[in-house]
Image (cartoon, rainbow, N blue to C red; front, side, top):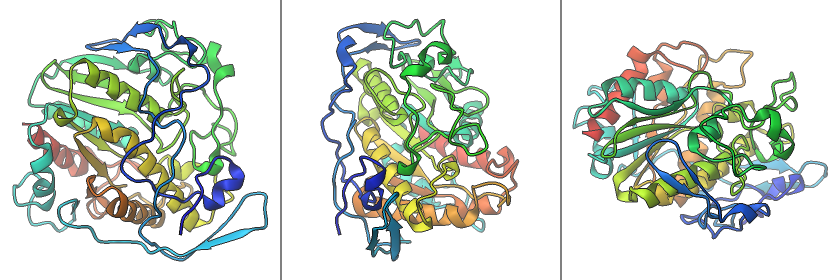
Length: 402
């Protein structure tokens, strides 16, 4: 059964529609008149600010997913109910899927472990690695940095929550001449050009007020600590990029409308300068923050399928720039009763994404970490400890980098 692509709140009942493996040509934002200018990006690349030709500013139509389970989705502000039947796929071909379990008899770094066996043919010895995610990915990146086998020099780093665009070297939507090296908090003069998210479409961020629908901080992320870090040199590097949601408007630019489009443009510009896709590997994770988006109009089935849809749209943007694309499944939580991130939802959302990737993006490698994380010590509801979880996981990626 086919669905319409969501363009507004009234289309959400028909928005659970999955994409293929290529993005449509871009239709640039209307404020792209400054596209002839250029700017320097901090660090080791030069970015041209010409309007990108690969970012999907309009979401595209594709085939429906692997059937999951029967669900009902009621459109907001209407009495119409659309019913579609789908089935969750829980298995994956060994070539594209691996699982890290509590009772594994081998370590992740052992050649015989199914995850190393899965990833090594595609990712082994690639010089440029990108880690895209929220604070959970940041914990993993920190562990990898301590064991990185090449130059561990920090080339650039931004710690301010509102410094994400400064790190990426892009201006805010209203000003294409911002000096990114001196303006890390862009909130004060650019908020009027920032469009708040549409939560009905599963779009972040969430507000800081009690209802999570007001008091936004434009051009800022919620993550603590640094929001971006590049480590290495011109020959080998690892980089952490701040992407907290699967679909959000935290970091738009004059040429992009979402954070996901912005990081895709950043990767595009880096490859135009010195990298090719066959040299890069991207490890991607998002979803914990998505669970905090107030989506009153959706039942559980609709929310998980919308999440899977947004994951696929996000990965399609990254696909041209990531020679190896690895989706790191959501990790288990401590099931704190006052938190939106609960294990039942984690399992449901993981299965929705795994089924979608099996059907529509089989080239994406999937690493399921749920079982191991469920039995590993936590720091809080969503973050785990370094010795018990992030370090052994990081060891896998460090071995692949050598």
